[in-house]
Length: 327
Image 1 (cartoon, helix red, strand yellow):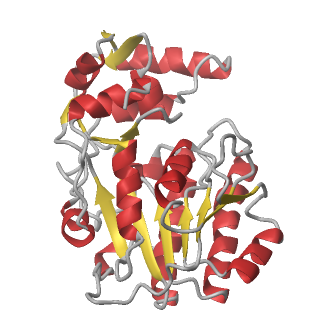
Image 2 (tube, helix red, strand yellow):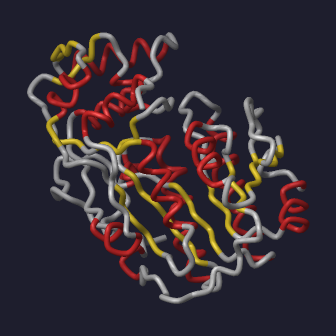
């Protein structure tokens, strides 16, 4: 399937009535850090329903939570009874240690079922959180990649192949179901009290870098991602949008801003060490992740700033501090 982002007429229809506000917003993956923050942002203004296999500790009483698997039939019951006004899909699994069949089935089959229910019950809005990682860090990348760039991140990263397939399924759904406003968001590296690779990397007490490589990197505060999702819920918004935070900076400067030490290591040595640590389950970073601190992968987010009205609210220092739970 080819990348069809270039054909998306990302637009907003002025004056469209917001008559869906009395219907709930359904959030998959609500028990993750982003899901919780989005739910807390929305629940005072809109009814929120969450779906997640995990329990929702500290759940506000007015947020309804269904502790179920996306692939189970009860998901259809939720759509039938609740008729959501919007679905925000945050329930993508990112765990390279999970069995590949289970990983693929959860991500791809689960999302296909979700798309079936969105179409069957005529949900007006679908938002899918993808990632700028779908483009892939490569030595021949343009300085800033637009939404039309090919999705090549799966060439070296098996974990990202599911995300690329889901991203492309959402693009296909855009054309098959034009009555649903489908939005795909591709943020740069998200930093915050989240358990993702960029934040975990910057939490290391001594941060390794690759000798001879100091790529420019983009990061985005987790609350800026939440704000972009909220803006994407507005009626009339559809299409694919890259998201970035403050201006990019060299990886070395990003690390220095954490206050931690960094140590340069030759690539071949680092790769061998990580492969050995991975085999002993002593690290959460598979060796292919090294390309993210070796090559550039930055995005052009002008479309989001123009169409969504997105602007980042957190500067680089606040974004970096969020890794340690500050702000």
